Length: 156
Image (tube, rainbow, N blue to C red; front, side, top):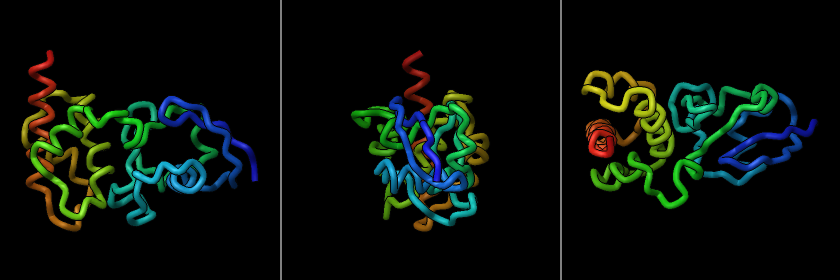
């Protein structure tokens, strides 16, 4: 075990863990950020998506030793009050069914809209393609991303 200093949601945390411990388990088990979900463990489903320096990544596929002074943002850090445009769009469209994948969906959408604030439908579909929703709420997810993009557009 080694001691790692990691920056999560704007706060520096000291974590004692094995170097090969996936970030997902550091977040959930060591730091109690449980909004990030375990889905598949191989980076294929998107349930564990967080931001690393603004880029959406699968937290099950990166180890704590690989963070190298990177800033991590989880669903809990996206907005303290749930007022991020993507979170607001999710509520407006009433996206969640079971809700399990939603934090990963939201984190993917938020990072995507930072890079492409006014996407078309095909770009939204492409960006969200790697996130699996077992309930099949893909149409609602796509609509919510478009709503969030419209809210970005009106705030310009």
